[in-house]
Length: 270
Image 1 (tube, rainbow, N blue to C red):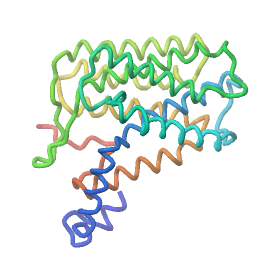
Image 2: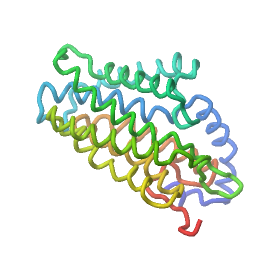
Image 3: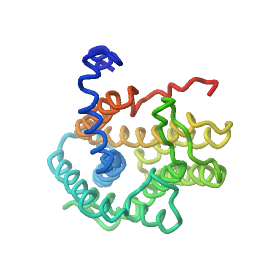
Image 4: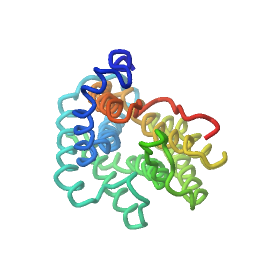
């Protein structure tokens, strides 16, 4: 990250800005802004799904970016004004019970519908939301393992490993079913994205329990789905990158780490 070279850790310039970014980071945590990665991806997935029902071969289409941005603004407001205050969306913060899993899945379907609805939408394409919701639920089960950052040690750790097989096996199966349904509905986005995402919960399931496997399984499937919807809606890269680099910068000054990150830099012997 370029900012690491401009503001080396523990340098005078770094320490000058650290308190300000720490306050900003606390504010972002309070507002749950990091949840927008999932919420925005779900909404744009609905937009992309609708585009695909109109033209299966649509690719890198910048048309509709204004409507897309308006929809992202709408779901952001919905999150901050309704779901966040009422604590209806708390994925990743704790282990969810069955009712909370159902609630999160229904809210995910709502975001998909908000993206999907347009003047060209037809009831015939509504069923194609199903594999997207299954994939979301599969990824959500990975977030049943809450990962926290130990500031004193500078390490990530998993709070609890119990029910590892229960959650990760179901996660793998749900994502696999979404692959099959993607083929059935002739949807290359969900079928391919799910296919690429399957190895991450599977590796976390098979290999010895280690937080780095969960880190990859939590981050990469969401990243993969976001990148695949950008194939059809490239304008989404702009707000997505803005959110991504905002958190990377804030977390760098706050903790001295680069997070979110494409790499998992834990020592192998931990």
